[in-house]
Length: 362
Length: 211
Image (cartoon, rainbow over all chains, first blue to last red; front, side, top):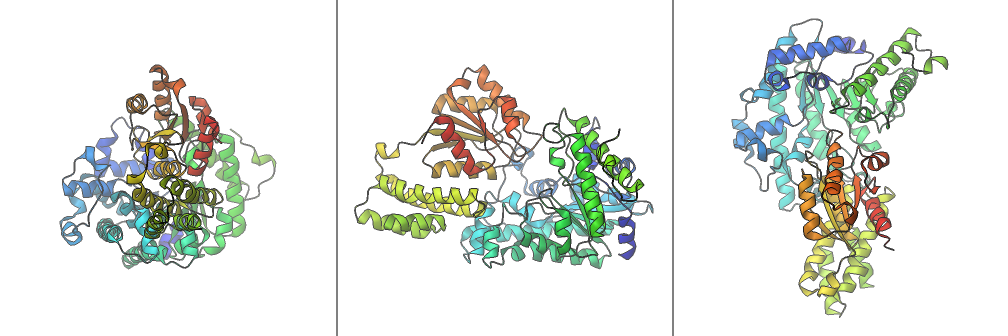
């Protein structure tokens, strides 16, 4: 783990952008289904973004897709599929094998293919159990709130069972990726946020955040640690201070947060062993009205200089997986270039940013 | 006094209490319309205000709306046609290609809570479905939701389809969702933008010139 941390701490900037590169291919579907092609794509991403961390595509629909395939639900109905009654968790988990699903198998094979390469850090990827649960029931907010009120009606029972199923699926998928040689797992739990869980209820003493989010993440982290792998915990949703402290308290190897957080202020709650990643507002990169190339450059410099002051290990990055928006691909790519120019200028001056270098130089 | 109790129970999201109070109030001779206006809608107005001030979050709004619906369900069989007359009619949907519904549901609930009749077309709604719904329900307001940058163009497409169908001038169009902005709303020719569910109701009232 010490060695892994050392390897990661040399990374100064990288976007989560394997999916962005995939969008440039005329046949993305072929890549998504092939472990070897996916491994090539991850390597291409490493080379383009000058990073050893080889990250799979952050497609958080895959696990639900795999479950629906198991349930015999066709692709057209999949997005609208929700459990209305409690599932048979043990039966479904007994049947679930990530290697039987084409996209999950491709990810696992890609990891296996990269795991032996010294110059890459093969990362795994999974949705978090709570976020998966939110995709599997029609209203995931009300039962969690009711549970926080101490109630246990049918909706709470269904929610809890679906969460147990989600946790079981995620555990199996992560175990397969670890067995394939993943050194770190990107665990994306974007729904662990203020939309799905009430900060007011938590402030008033409910243990709902611990019960629905943290306990499962802690268990998953233990599984990774037992295999000598690190946790790259990603949550780009809006977090309250307590939520942030809860996630930081898991002491992941890397903590990736959304652009609503001020990283240099949050730093005091984050253990020194955790590398902070983020958090340029990449969801706005598609728009030059909302965010210009100049803005990205300036924000990058600000993040780098403020984080340098904290002396906390930091990787300049995107707040989330970089999406390719039709018609805006180059606009987004230009902003990634601006992020890298800021990083290069910052470090070429040894972290000393004068007023003149705050302007973007092409 | 009982109106305040109903309103308070809505704010606190206590659905069984709301039901019980509604029954008691009916026994005491209050009219269903009065109970809706001064009890349920008044409660949801407080919820909306607290949401705007970040004192309430999405879960509190959903729980309050659930309590309001429990109250409405208890009253519905007793309501006269006059008492059912809504402030205005709203058609709402998440645009084509987008499957997110939390924000859209929240907006729908806030409108219901403000006395609007809400026709919820659901998620992944094609422009042609909005056209059909406008022709059927004759709404004053159409609300379009999108959560993804990749699905925002479907908002523009929907507005364009309304123009082509000759329906654009009959309705006010408001848009919202995480990546949507005021400038985007103007760019695609929408009438307004709201950054949260409660503001959406305010925006609709403003556009329709409702006090």
